[in-house]
Image 1 (cartoon, one colour):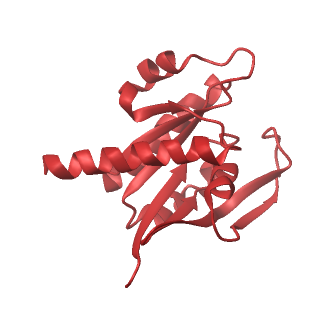
Image 2: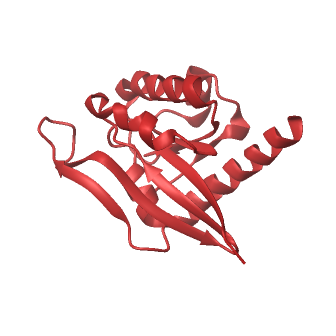
Length: 175
């Protein structure tokens, strides 16, 4: 029996937790194309092309594609999103200076592909992190699209994917 294969894109600004999210969920060895950061982005390494991992659930295989967060690699956002069934947008709650970038990523991908989207709010445990309700209001996302997550914990990431699958099913029944 052949597997059902689904493509999921994980996107968001620099430092939101995309690489960690893919690594936490993948049942296979992950693949990342990253380099030393050439500017101060708050970390040593940065994704320059993609992160890739595979989550297996029964007869289903979910190919997880993490996008680069820097705008200079934005051409990869479209390449990686083509053919995807859903978008996981990660937003770092402690970096409101990145909210505009997260919104630009979301608006661009949604305008091109109208992907079902869920939002993982990361870094909620950091001092001065925005409340998830305030972030939802800022982005005009409904609360059922959003979840507070820790991308280092696979159970947390899995709950967000379950929410995405639920949203996808809900959208399919509308159509």
